[in-house]
Image (cartoon, rainbow, N blue to C red):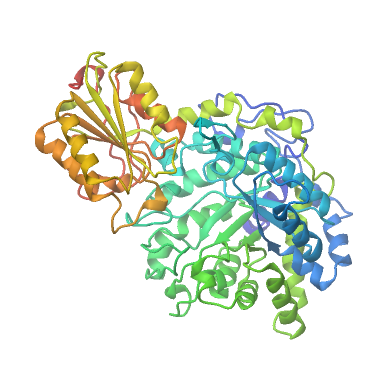
Length: 623
């Protein structure tokens, strides 16, 4: 069997497991041994040591029969994947009927869903599946678990979190643990929870190598800066997903890690030569293809060295998608575009033309075209004009239908709503998120042995949190843990609009404090190289250092912020503002838990890959 045949055979086997949700719960323990063997099997589920062959091995193929019966317009509809919000939308509402119209009029092949509660999303997707003549393939961005999109609702004015799916720390936190078993567990739980709500394609993992500290779009979404580590952890995550019934998606090909431009706003240009790409950006994608990843998502970036010196976006480049990804790397799965409404594409190309160019380049499914009808019409016209052959359309639609058949959507497309509570956001899954968060906390600076803190109950401690005004949960879990140790804890919130006199007052309070803890809830969407931190926050932290006030700075997101406050006495990376990471970071300040994380990125001259301190419990000099 040739390597290409082995890849194809493995891909055909992946994705059918747990479709009927007959799998036994997977034990919370996943330490030791090889991650590929630690799955609990239910009789007939295909989970465990041997993965059962999916429907694609049937001699009477539903995919082949279905393709033969479709008109050209129906085939093209299968290649389109519009966006739907996961909110509650009753029948008859504008938002409900708009999606039903897309499904019934254009017969789209799938949907990409975002933001909603697990039950609302499951109910909504069930309804849309019933309106579709063919089963819909549903995708969602779940880079940090199903909770990446299906969690975070807060009831106002009580500020009560309403719960949801499991939200993990971001991939870079897994990189800080260096543990492929945790990456596998994260993929496994993401698959179980996503399938429970009707999502088949978690658009994950991010395999971009984040080599540029000023990257405003990838940042902690990456596993790190080492190509080999990104490949190792990424393929473990892929195995966890695909061995539990979901189709993994390696993104963003050919690599979005070395840029200072946000492709949502404009087209990034990657100037690397082919030798650099082979040794850095392409390493994780090559590993993913060899591991049998089911799908790849394109990047809206221009890489002239791959495209004859031109600045054509990779999503629209046959040199990148066909010549490199399909022919050279041997990828045979689904090729998804990134969202076509992003400015890197939508501001540069006519909308119908952009869709045609993407399909000509090698894309199978076009995500979020700004106008679905225009996208379908443009592809139909391109085929009728002889610009694209119908055989080319058939090739993509055959892959799409085969994927639906492997997932057994031809037999069962509706999910059981009563299974959502048994599989989504359950304690065993949250325990894994907590474990990743604890093991990922990384200490990069600890001047005068400030940490671990002693937790002196009489100490006057001030906690200052920088957050977006809309981030109501930032600091809530963190300060709850601190208050258990410091009953006299004082708190303050600041954001980009905080007035200067507020900082003057905080400076006065800080000088009267025994300890100041500054939490920076700055995530990758705020990672602008121009001003990652407000000047007032930088000045406040610098003043703490100048005045000799004991202080610790924690980054709950962008890890590169040490460049802005290089004199911080203690600097910890907690990687995100999730509830699990807030609790883990607070516990790490004290001597009752160790700090074991090692940074998977570098920021010369402050730290390098593998750096991290593990202070001895007795060494702490703080209050």
